[in-house]
Image 1 (cartoon, rainbow, N blue to C red):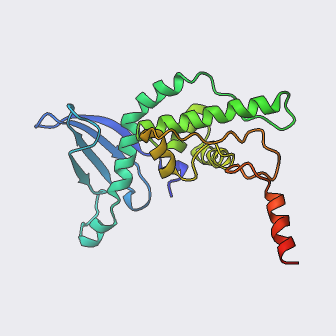
Image 2: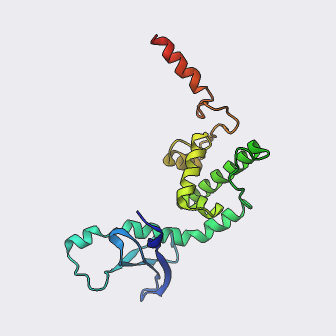
Image 3: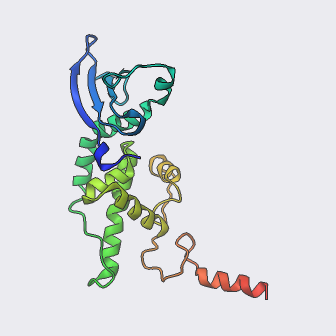
Length: 211
């Protein structure tokens, strides 16, 4: 798990002899601590790297076990986020100023909840459209940590405004199958957001069958 002290450093590294754009990533945690990854991108495509160069930490003796421990996937994810962040930021700006998470005792609480959830869902779907991390997009939009963003996403999903899994939401967002999650923002406590039915009544009915 990456800590606040393991935030990667991502910077342009010029161009290689073959003209490919180079991006250097270091400062990753875990098994990648001390390693530097240099990804090469074809500017004509640019979405994914065509090669990667690994530089081991100073003084490390490289053997087969060391190579197996290196997490290239984590470095690639960091590079993907870095390259797509500017586009995602522009799309998030189009959503306007995000509202703060409302407190239950706030005036017009219901309306504020609807607006807050709308921004969470919109940021999530922007991330999907750009193959970006949804928690990071929500965090970027609201100026909170990815951990807080993940919690908010879970709350919105429980309210029925996102599909039950990331893959389902991705398929529905990109596939255009007409799916529209029901708006459960005004449901009373104990209501199943997926069906709109009272969970309490269902539980009571089941108990009655066994009495």
